[in-house]
Image (cartoon, rainbow, N blue to C red; front, side, top):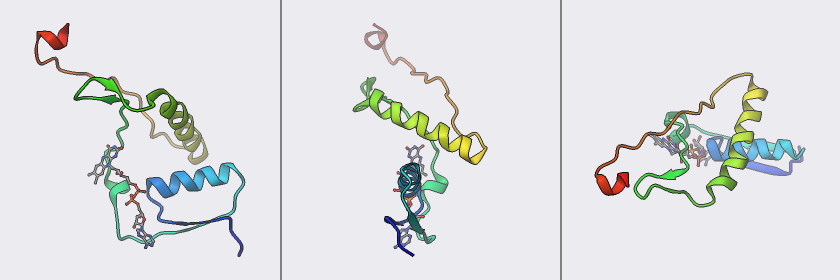
Amino acid sequence: MEVDYLIIGSGLAGISFAETCLLHHKKIMVINNASQNSTTIAGGLYNPIVLKRFTKIWEAEAQLAITIPFYKNLETKLGTTFLYEIPLFRKLNNIEEQN
Ligand SMILES: Cc1cc2nc3c(=O)[nH]c(=O)nc-3n(C[C@H](O)[C@H](O)[C@H](O)COP(=O)(O)OP(=O)(O)OC[C@H]3O[C@@H](n4cnc5c(N)ncnc54)[C@H](O)[C@@H]3O)c2cc1C
């Protein structure tokens, strides 16, 4: 079988690339073994703030503009919900942080 992309690993990276390929009508083959399990045990948290400095991560808006529709499409495709927006609280350590 002829494919456009052979994807080794179906963790978060492999799945994201595979889904992107399918969105672009590419033929793919995915090969996965069970040697690693980061994706299946991860907390699943994405956070646009560097908590240490309270600044946005690199290209936060651009990254979220891609990430959120991508996962929403995946939810629709799979008929499930896994994207939950939750508020982020930061405990203020001192008066300088408060100001
Ligand atoms: C406890 C824990 C909690 C985490 N929580 C978060 C979090 O809240 N938020 C966050 O953003 N990140 C989190 N992470 C990090 C995140 O899980 C990883 O960065 C991400 O899952 C990595 O995805 P990946 O596809 O690169 O790798 P993996 O998930 O490791 O997927 C790689 C896949 O390739 C397979 N594979 C490897 N070699 C071969 C081969 N030769 N042939 C075939 N298949 C192969 C592996 O078996 C695996 O299935 C967490 C990680 C851990 C360990």
